[in-house]
Image (cartoon, rainbow, N blue to C red; front, side):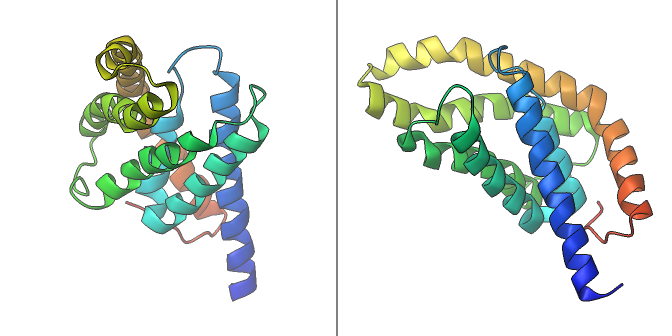
Length: 179
C-alpha cells in the first residue's frame, strides 16, 4: 500500500471515529452524563494509540463546540474539556497501559466519571462565581451518574466493540496500533 493510500485511509478512519463520538454524544445529550464517549475514547486509545486518539479528541472538542445544537460551549470551558478528554489516552498510555481487561477498564471508567467532573470545577467556579462547596455538592450526583454509565457501557460493550473494530480495521488493511 502506498503512503498516500495509507494516509487517506488513516484520515478517513479517524474522521469516522470522531464523527461517531460526536453523533452519539449529540443523540444522548437529553440524558445528563449518560453517553458512550468514555467507552469510545478508551476503545480508540486501545486500538489506535495515543497520537491518533489525540487527533480524534481534538476534532471532537472543536466539532462539539462549533456544532452543538445547544450553542457553543463557553470558551472558558474549552481547556477543561480538552484536558478532561486527554486524561483518558494519557492515563491509558502510561500508568494504566497494562490494564486491558473489561473489568479493569470499567473500573477506570467509574473513577473517570469523578475525574471528569473535577477537571471542570475550577473553571465553573471561576465562571459562575458560585461557592466551591455548593458547586461541588450539586455536581457530585452527575459525576456519580457518569461514572456508573461509564462502568456499565465499558463492561458490556468494550470487548465486543474491540473485536468488531479490530476485524474491520484488519479487513480494510489499516495498520493501527492494536492492543
